[in-house]
Length: 119
Image (cartoon, rainbow, N blue to C red):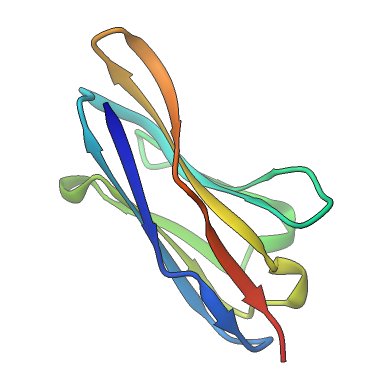
């Protein structure tokens, strides 16, 4: 059993900042990748940022230079620092974990946290 607990969403004005956190716990041996997707109303889910085991990162083009993904390996936690937020960043943000377990490699998802950017 693997659990992901997200926190940090909320309402922020355009130009503001938020920091999302996602802590993973449970039975897994190693983390292959962690990251964040988002889904806005009426739109498909899109990958926002990911960080892989070696530390490499990838970002959605529209968030490059504004969002930063990082991780604390000791805490199995990933963070998403979001700066210069725009109304189009409004969405439910989902944490994901791709990890190695006894039974193989699997994806796990958090429950989602709402981010609303509005004046």
